[in-house]
Length: 407
Figure (spheres, rainbow, N blue to C red):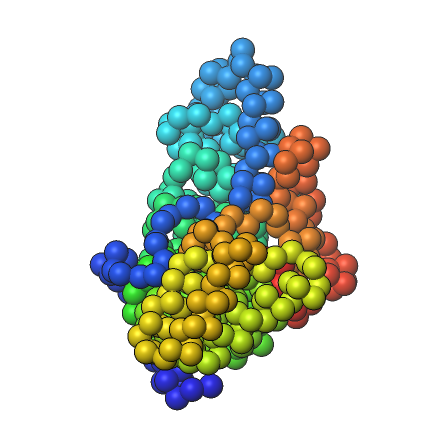
């Protein structure tokens, strides 16, 4: 590890990350979009259930809402029942309806726990509702509310919340929520993998020196805890370092990637090498891609066009005729054999994550997977009724965090 990397990692944690430099020049555009797909967050199944319930109670929907409003009034002694709250969440259409859901949820959480006979887990469902209504501020308020304490302590709830903040471009707030999640250490697990990915994605989108300092500090904390980040988190962090003029740090970070030949890892590596003038190390990587394709006959390995252009500029600045001749020869081969991808590295790096892992490497991973609504919708609707398994059962799903790269 370089001295530069050591010096950066030893800086104090930066929480007040500035956003004024987001628009600064960078080789990668900073567009904003959701990171996890609807199916990965269970939103498609939630919408399916919304439609089903609205059809079922279309004739009594207004009366039901009136009754629920009465139940949350100060003078009312009526209980909030699990089924009523669940139904209200799914039929909420207006801001007033969403406010009623939150009021019901608070009263529900105040009720004596001994009176709750159901095992329904509301955290992910409520956050899916807030996600589809694009209520990011309210989602933060609910997550931090003492009146709702404990209701959102599920890995999938963390993921839905942070993805909502990511989609709205509120990256500073995302990192603040991330620190709260880390402090919770749910079931002793400090750094949920999907949550780490979203935190690194926020740093990448902020794209300034402060966010790089935060990302490297987080990277240091992950290493100290024995957590190996998923590939997407690794590439976000490394690409941010390249954007901020720290290619040497990017190369150190990429060393931890399990698949060194994965497309985004390979592209960031050659971009970083070009930036520090090590073109003699870039050309062998380019040649190896051609050789690998010719020998194995497998899928063509590609480089992003913006990365090739970056290398070309570095070659031109080197004023080395032999190097220029060899690069031009390789570029012609790339163009002819389809080794150049017109998608930018940023676009490829920020592609939606389509499916949740079948094993997240986190305690009780199976529960979180079963809580997620899937594209089949109805058949998975009742998944939220499952209790978390006893610790003895959960152990067989526990692994050291980060043993598998699934994104």
